[in-house]
Length: 107
Image (tube, rainbow, N blue to C red; front, side, top):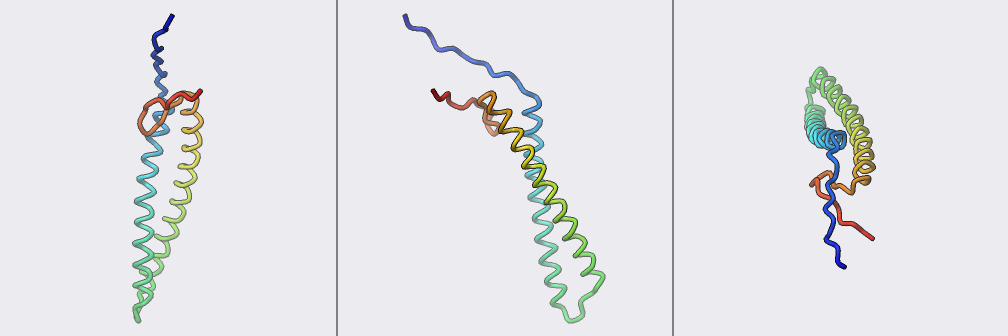
């Protein structure tokens, strides 16, 4: 006797969803911080190449660079933690956080 396939409904996991949303925001924040860092580094290079470099501009740009480097390090750490949590939690359900679809069952 043939049995019909069983439809499995995965539980809604608000914590997993929250982590995925936060991870997306962290990725966006990282992109902005990296762009700001690159821009400040370019401006610093240009300022240092001027014969009459304004030391207040140089000091300000150095501060911006240090702040962005610190922010990037913090965001990268947060991203790694979130990724680990998401991977572990999603594996329990066979979910893919990017598409919210179940992965194929492997026997």
